[in-house]
Length: 255
Image (cartoon, rainbow, N blue to C red; front, top):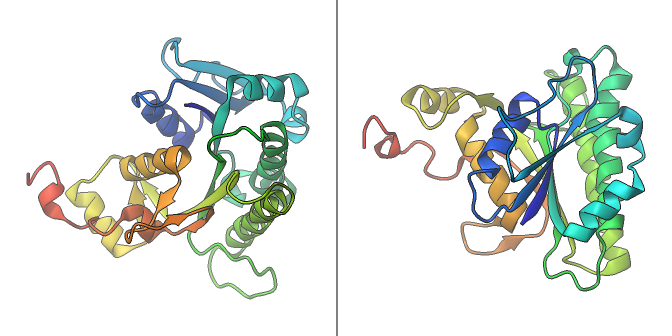
């Protein structure tokens, strides 16, 4: 399977990329990043046969180069994990925060779904968006905490899920799945005792667990505990943690 990781040089994007490289089912990763003088030239320590690194300007993210879309279609890319974005405080102004969190992923979802639309497709194209726990899709409500971030992420969810609905209305169900993963605080490391305590105290998830689930959703979609399958939509932090998140018998120090 061939997959895109957008924002491959960020904290989460790098972790996602490195995990994908360990998976036999992943044959190639297209690692996309925003071109900037401050951006490292590579997301991996040395060239890797399974990675093609591509830097795009903001203008190219806003209007994807047709030759790049054609390349993705030709090789049969099946998913995109979108890791570009973040809290408004990490951007110079609100417009920049909304652009990174709403406009760029929306344009990517629309461009990729149009380009990769193929009646002979055997599986859906999946677009994975990193949202935030408590994302608010109603812009008119009053929020006491993280109001701007939660409304920005909620607006992105609305628009991205509208892309899926519009695509399904035109092409039928089952060929595009948009998943919005609502993350709490992402903790460094894996299932350690310290992380289990933190996950019990406040909404959070350890990096190893999140990356594993994120990549699994990109490859296979989301399966409910009862066996049913979800064809896109919101996945909450508690669902990402899974029912056995607090099982200390599965912590390396106790096993």
